[in-house]
Image (cartoon, protein in one colour):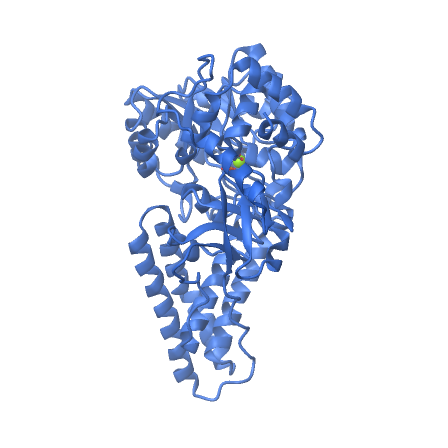
Length: 545
Ligand code: PEP
Ligand code: MG
C-alpha cells in the first residue's frame, strides 16, 4: 500500500507502526447525582491539575514549545471557561460533561473563525481531553511508551504531545490531519523528525506494520521491499554529505546568501551558529500577539535594537506586522470575516490602522540608526504597484533606505515588473503564494496536498518574479518554506531567485545541495520543472537528476 501525504523535510526512515491511542469517548449527558458544589470542585480541581501538568512540561521543555504550553495552561484556568463550566453544572451536568461542553463551545467558535484561529481549535480539544482524563482519574491518551523505536501514527498531534517526544524512540511521524504549516509540521521540521502529514489513509495503518516513510516524496509505503529501502537510503546518504558551514554558493561560486527566518530575537544566536548570513524574514507578529493594545514605540524600539545588535554589519529584513483576519488583534479595527485568508490582512489591515504601521516604522528607523546592521523593511500581502508605492513612500518618510514587498498574492507576480519599478526588492512568501494560487487554505488538512510549492503554476509565478528581478537588477529572495527544501532551492535559484531565507535548521541541507549545481545546471533543471504538469513531475526532475 502506498499512501500520499505532505512530507516535512527530506528524511527517510523505516520501522514498525505504533498508533496513538484513540481519544477518550464523549462523556454521557445523564444528570449529575451529587451536589453542584461538589461537582464543581471536581471540575475545578481537574482544570487546576491540567494547568499544573502543562506548566511542568513547559518548564522541562524550554524553547519554542514552552510559550505554547504556558499559553495552554493559562487557557485551562481561564475565568470565562470556569464560569461556563459552573453554569453547566448548575444546569445539572456532570463535571466531565460540563468540561467537555465548555471546551467544545469554545472550540466551535474558533473553528468558525477559520484560518489561524481554527488551527488553535485542536489545542483546545487536547486540553479538554486532559481535563476529562483528570476528572475520571484515567490516564490521558498519550504517545505510547515502549522500549523499541517506532513510527508514530496519529490523527493529529497536539503541541503537548509533540513537545517532549522521546526522539530515541520516535523514528518518524505520520498524521492524518495537519498541513505543512501546522504545529506538527513546524515541530517536526525544527527537530528534524521525518514526517508525512495530511495522509488520508493513515487510519488504515495498524500497529506493528512495517512502513517506509519518505518525507522527500511525501509517501508512506507499507511492507516496503529491501530494494525500496536501499534506494531511499541512497538518496538520503547523498544528501547527508554536508559541506562545512559558510556562505551559500553554487558549484561555480555564484553566491546565494542563506538567511534566517526568525520570530524571536532569542533565536538569533542559534541562527548565527548555523551559518545564517543575516535575517531574511523577521516576523514581527510575536511582539503584538496576545496584547490588548499595540506595543509602544519604545518597547518596539528596544526589541528591534536587540535584533539588529545580533547581526552587526549584516542584512536584516524585518516584515511589518502581518495581522488581521486570521490573526485578529484586539486593537485592530475590522469585524468577523467569512473568508479570513481573503480578508483584511497584512498591508490591507495596516492601511486601515496606519498609525500602528507608522509607529512600527519609526521604531525600526530609530533602531537602525543606532546599529551597524543593514535594515531592510518589507510589507506583507502586497497585491500591486499602488500598494507597493504606498508602503515604499511611507518607509522613505521615516528615512528607511531599503523598502521592499513580499510577493505572496499571485497578482504581485503578474505585475512583478511594475512592482520592482518601485520597490527596492521582493521576497517571495511561497506559503501564501501557494495557498492563493491553488485556492487551498494552508491550514486545512483536507486540502493539504494542494499546498505544494513544487506545483508548476507556483513555479511559473516565481519565474515571472525572477525575470523581473534580473531585468531591474533588484534582489528577489524566497522566505517561504519552499526555501528550506534543498531540491526546490536549486529550482528556485534556476528561476532567478538570488537569496534564500529559511528556518536555521534547514541551512545545512540547502547549503550542501546548492554546492552540487552550477547556475547553468540549475537553470536547465528549472526549465524542465516549469514544463511539468504536476508537482510530482516537477519534483521528479530533481529526484532523478
Ligand atoms: C509566506 O507566506 O510564505 C511567508 C513567509 O509568510 P507567513 O508564513 O508568515 O505567512
Ligand atoms: Mg505569508
